[in-house]
Length: 297
Image (cartoon, rainbow, N blue to C red; front, side, top):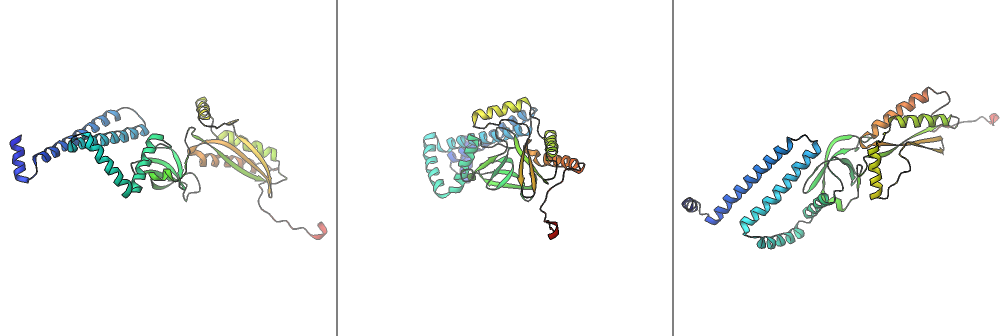
């Protein structure tokens, strides 16, 4: 072995110690890569959903990267004391010269530690709404929702957001703690309409197409109320009545899952339209102008 390294040193002019470090580094990288492949194949053979598969891939990537960095640093710096000194100097330089990338790394650590959202959650940040599809060292990625679409549905665009935005912009998590939202549908009817009958129609439509919460979901909400000061007197659809300039406004409020706002509203409106058109004593209200002849006053 010494003769081989001596021959390579004579041929290339590379110091034997450096050459040994290079070969050992290559061996470490290959072993880590092979270990990752084996572990990943064993894990993916298990029956699990896509979210868990994604989590395993990301976790293995982080573990292999950190372990590889430590092993390579130990090979080249011969001990952890020089590593600490090196990392201290490197960190100081990065903070001064690369403020934005360092802020993004800090945001990534915040994501891993506090977990304000996870892959699959629907969030809103800095005016962007979307479903989180990836989280990386410098940025996270969302599948944009809403945008130019006048509803909570995907636009087809993928938006990359720097992790540093987590320290600057407020975040809204649609899924946190309780995967349901309160949605409202408002209908204006004329003063002459049978508003009590209209209330019954709206309530029936909301009960039919809103979410029927299971005991597990109610227990989930109870646990959320213990962690945060969130209380709801009732989870059933509720209707509110208000007099406006054009007539009587009826607003039905009901629970729906995060991804079903448009679908549930669509179904509620179809039932309401069918029922109102079949009723002679209910009329939609809209801005109108009435003229009276002097002799009619």
